Length: 138
Image (cartoon, rainbow, N blue to C red; front, side, top):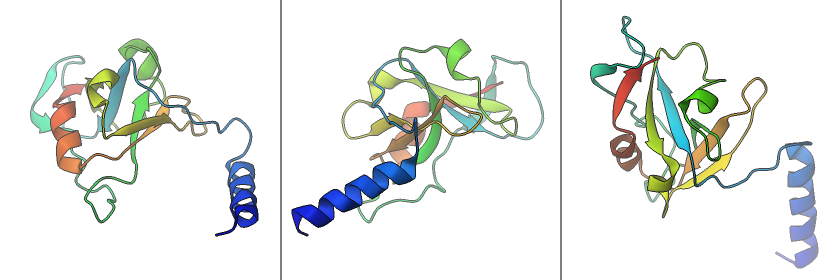
């Protein structure tokens, strides 16, 4: 591809993303993955035997995810990262962003009504599931 075509494609991609769509890499704070489980429990307590799996995520031929929805907030904690997590999730899993350094990519990807929405990619579903660990009641 010649440089002029590449520049035109890049300009279109930036235009299509819209204003305020800047994405930044997140390497600090907590990362939250929502999950819906049957029943109800005590908020903040573990959901017995349940994890937040990533098995249904789309992957590249190399087995790494193209992008999974998570919540993140640079330097954030649960109190400022959980807001925006869709109501359909009654539990969540959490991991420190710093433990995702390396192959995975974690970027901000705000969507209407959820400024804490982020995108996790470049990691296998199995590895992501293992890193996020057990679910906690919301």
